[in-house]
Image (cartoon, rainbow, N blue to C red; front, side):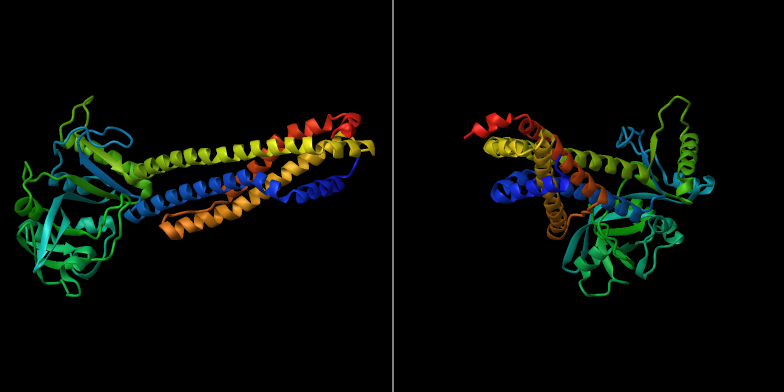
Amino acid sequence: MMSFVETSRISFRALKANKTRSALTMLGIVIGVMAVIIMFAVGTGANRQISQQFASLGTNILMVRPGADRGPGGGSRNTVNTLVVEDAYSITEHCGAVAYAAPVYGGNAQTVYGNANYPAKVTGTILDYFAIQDWELVSGRAFTDQDVRSATKVCVIGQTIVEELFGGEDPLGKIIRVKKIPMVVIGILEELGDSPRGNDQDNVVIVPISTAQRRMFSPSRPDTVSMISVKAIDETHLDIAQKQIEDLLALRHKIRPGQDNDFSVRNLTQFVESAKSATAVMTMLLTAVAGVSLLVGGIGIMNIMLVSVTERTREIGIRMAVGAKSSDIRLQFLVEALTLSLLGGMIGIVLGVGGAQFISTGFGWATEVSLMSVLLSFGFSGFVGIFFGYYPAYKASLLNPIEALRYE
């Protein structure tokens, strides 16, 4: 039996003699591996970006909304506002696992300063809201509890409002009109960027909740809020805080046993997991589609190898006549198929990594090439070479030497 090294040398020589055919045979493997790596990179990058965006909001944040919970990924079953300002203060006072709780009520409104105007999101809340969101002010101050009690016409604005209304002018102390109501700018938020949903967090005007309720918007009940934002002491107290809030509000809202709550408590971890699950499903679907290219490439290898067996029948007969065994012939064609698939896999890895970087820089998508995706795609390309190369190799090893020598 010939040595593996000698068999490999013969295989490489045969591939080198048919460079164009070998390159075309590898093309399916190259495209398949490249596609798998790029799809994995896009999916992994999307998951990382989701985690980073939600982490910037704080992983120990809870949101209490009116209406019964629909379940995972759902919102409220009705639109009746059942939460009031006093619910938020009660949560802060009676829930030991809660650090801060802030009622939120607002809407969209046109902001005007001089000849400039811009549509903005108006958020009415209390001072604790800044601590919950970990928002810092680059200048000025936040409103006080006294401002909330007095419904003072003051506001804190985001960087988008600063740029759109004031340009290079200092906004502090200036009066802007929000829903035609004059508001004194007392603070400017640091730049926040986009939220996980892609909304501009800098396009915001934050006012005392009493100001939003009494002067800007008209809730059905004077103390109604659209949401209560809550910050637990830390991540380990998140579930405890959620249970304490549910028990407290059920008591305050007189929810009887067996009745659905008229509120829902959700934490950002649930949103992160839901978003990651959706991204993972899409990644697996796209990767499966990309994997089809690998299978197509494997079928291409098998077809070309079968053609090669037919074309090299006389060569096989001569090798057998001079002492080569069936196992030598089978190993030679297996090595040729494996070499084509692994070489195609390596080229595909290079192109896949480069393609992922191009997508990241050219389109601004978050991509991350993982070692697992590289090893998986490379290993699968080797498996494809062996699996689809075995039949042609087996067929070549069964040739009768005499019949092979007669073949023209």
